[in-house]
Length: 219
Ligand code: DC
Image (tube, rainbow, N blue to C red; front, side, top):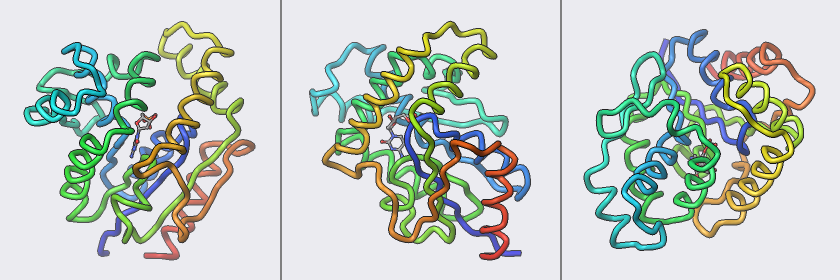
């Protein structure tokens, strides 16, 4: 059966990656977590100590950047496994900051489009259905209330042994949502032809089933 591309967009911590991974297993598709790519740029900005508002320094930093994913979902920045290092609160906020920069967006969007050329990808992010893959055969826009998303992230952190504060997490999610949906370039917004799913009251299995139905109809 010929493969298609699936775009999943939505605000931070809406469960996009979790759902995308499960769908990939069912469909034997590949997952591309585009947020992880912005997180890698953010980590490199922090490590090198450049000012993310310095366009020339950003361009230089992007020139040599190498971002890779292993088949089991690990993220590598310039050959180093950064899967955990890119998930801190500091890097989450810096990822949102660097993602406002057109230089960064152009560079990463090009990489993402090249990867998805051969189809069979489930890509999650903020601008996949609108900018990266406007021709994606299935577009999903996943939402959930900020409180629900913060609670989910809190429990996820607990499972990973990461200490966090629910109130601070809620605040960070609200701040990132605002910046991600109000920035000048490719702000987070639902593509006109995307199907919106509010997952606040849904289990992971229910969301996966609903999207599988949509995909099967398309296939
Ligand atoms: O999905 P995430 O929380 O890992 O993404 C981190 C940040 O990267 C997010 O706050 C906004 C940015 N981002 C983006 O601008 N476009 C994407 N396609 C993915 C993420």
